[in-house]
Amino acid sequence: MRVLFFFAALGFAIVGMSGVTLSLLNLIDETQAGGWPLWQSLPMTAIGAAGFLFCLVRVIRGVREEAPRH
Image (tube, rainbow, N blue to C red; front, side, top):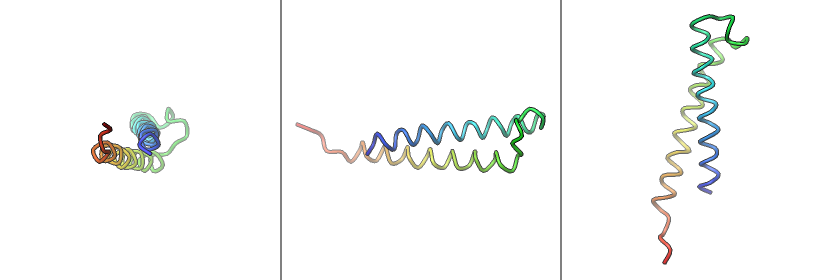
């Protein structure tokens, strides 16, 4: 299950960083953002960051709660 959350965190990080990049491009020059308006790229950033943090916490808790093998 930890592996699933790890890859989900990676996917959310990619989505979040894409949102940041598109938001910054949109603020610099709207024609360079590939047709993504700011109202679409900002929520993409927020969803990516929230999902990444959620999955990262789940992975860390899973590692901490896992019983050591003898």
